[in-house]
Length: 412
Image (cartoon, rainbow, N blue to C red; front, side, top):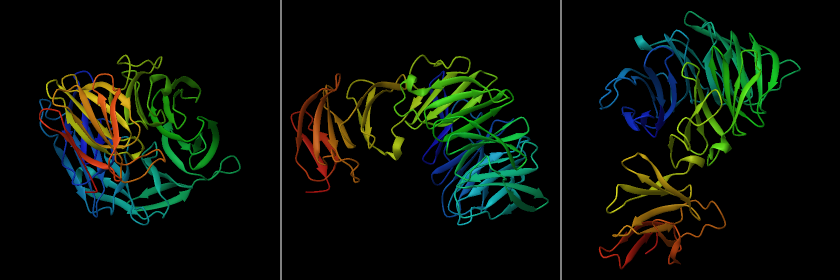
């Protein structure tokens, strides 16, 4: 499961089919899965953002996935982080208001159990303590342990002593009853209560994600590595996402399901891989199970359907052209482009693709807004290129007989 814009998506990797939850009114910003039920909580941005809890197993034959509960009015601007406790009864959430309000929600009764303002620094992860009696909140140069007493929340900061240092704390998980925190400098901080007990070198660069199971934890790092650790924090398996031909192998999220022996890996390249947890092999042979254009905050603007075949082409600010198979729901072919692109068009015969280059933001000195090319639709070889505008091109169309081609831009 993942979100794109204001839509939550459930992907069946075997049938290559998607189902959707479409009831958010603004972009979805965070997601938390219930520990035992087929429920997901998702938060959004907005002046008064909503938290929706919905059932991902409902309507197996199609249709919008239904919202079970809706909670509004707790936060302002956006909901940035959420997590269920082990029982699934409570949901903790953090807002992006000035002082990043932390709230513990009795979501089924749609009530706030307790809430408190925290600090002005950005919160990067939040979760319950292993016993569910408190909340751990981590962010830029802070780590706080909140105690819940009735409707009150009070915190104490972590004690790092001489073996730790204050820095951005990016993610958290549990090994047994101990909290494990991933750091900006690539370490795992093993906490005993709120006291730092020891540090473990984990990645070269930031530890971006921790997934916890009863067999240990799985971590994903900026270095493009996925590591499975035992309960004694010894490395059991190392997977290099560069070996799986990821476009940008930095790991942004991981989920280890030790019951099915699978790992889901989300990368900076807007890809999702499904891997075997025993040897790191790709469950689907090669390539990601899902991919998109959105890496590096790039936008998707260009789309054109093949005139006779079940294919369509997309391109965008990430400077890639992808041809998709509408029947198989997979990428048929892909190639790198010279620069960002905002418009494409298949010729009437489908043997050529026109590409209009440029974007509002100049990302490179080699970006020549207004340039356009015609590619061979099979080989992607350049058949013709020219530059007739000083502004980035926004639209292109062929005449019905394919003899002429028109482009539109911000200039007349």
